[in-house]
Image: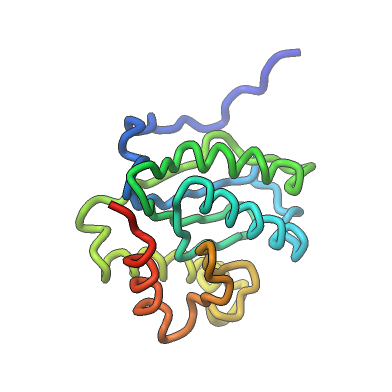
Length: 181
């Protein structure tokens, strides 16, 4: 049996240290061959559970994520010098594999390590809003808050809701409290 040819070429990953510590990374996971029959409330529940475990295990916070019919966005912030987003993504992909079946994640996940300017609060929040607005741009819903497959995952804060007015001031207070130097 011959391996399937790669359909896409990918830019090489940055060196490991760019994904460690207090890195801010926007991840995009695409389903293999853009399959669309996997996004269900049950999968979303499992996704959140595994995202909590990955975030806690690798000292990360996820201010926003969004599951689209053929891909998913995760925005992770490192909370400690030992945070490791490459390890976290490997753990996350491995542990969502069963819930995703018979679909698979396309390899590798696309990532964008946010530069210093992109990490400034207004620029960062614009990136988060861009992620949350995906379902609106795809005409799946009229407003981002109507979409059932996007939210926030910060271990220890199950009621955080990214669509509320008070979200960002509260998120930044939590981030400051959780961040270790």
